[in-house]
Image (cartoon, rainbow, N blue to C red; front, side):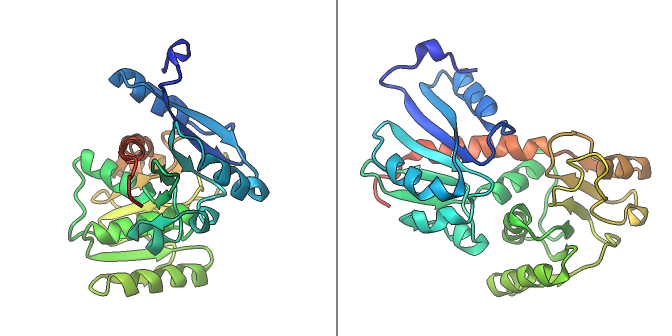
Length: 271
């Protein structure tokens, strides 16, 4: 962890903004990374309510020692209109989770949720090009993951959500951005896909419903999570019983930490 006794006026500062804030694990992971690298950087948590977001962001523009901040629930969409520029991915997804601050106070928004997920899969030796993927969910995280999967070259993408109209909206947006990709609205049945991904929060709480029909899983499939705690969710436990290869949620966070640290260290001089 970062040694707070060594923080000085030369320390480069970062923030993570959320509401609530108590559950976030990013400060521990990010500061451990800074410490391991011997870098004079520190990430601190800011508890900011939606009504106060614009005022807080305006103030952050003027902090010369601040190089950027991470944005999480519920601010990922609202932050877009508070940035001066946005990455192509942030525009496509309609959300940002990292904002870099240039020396003149300009803010640039990026979305790294999906890229972090894809990087975690690749680090585990799971390649995506030409694969068929079943994605449960059409919310914020699922949006980012869906676009990242499309950009990674999957051949077929099925999006299933409890509200099928929401899934259809995401399908339409992906089809517009990636016309070569076969993308459809699915049911609870994940059969006949190489990779099955839970992009929802189902499994976070005890007693949650399963995100898909696990009776349709087969041992040839890979099943992946975005949930970090518990490490083995009910979905992954069911997949293991069938003989599936499973991929836990933690690699997504660890890869995002690396990507976020690199993005905020870049300190865009020109927005």
